[in-house]
Amino acid sequence: MAEEVKAEMVSTVLNIEVAVGEKVSVDQTLVLLESMKMEIPVISEIEGTVASIHVSPGQVLQQGDLIAVIS
Image 1 (cartoon, rainbow, N blue to C red):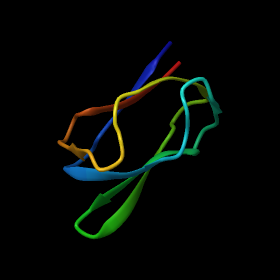
Image 2 (tube, one colour):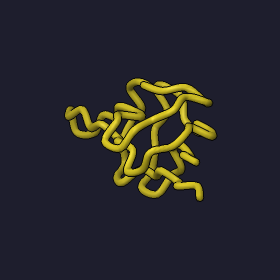
Image 3 (cartoon, one colour):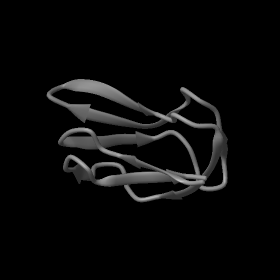
Image 4 (cartoon, rainbow, N blue to C red):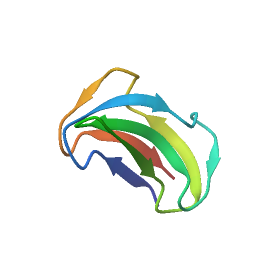
């Protein structure tokens, strides 16, 4: 079963911490976002493999935008 990781708020992508094909664990940081001068880590809620990444550094995200898929 795949999990879609989505942006919870308007933010900017600072850094991508994982790569497609990488195994991730629960609570592992996937992407680092910035919103209102605060750094916000996006963490995995499941253990799995990064199936796809849909963002790039500097990209502005809206609430609900797809960040990554973990399978």
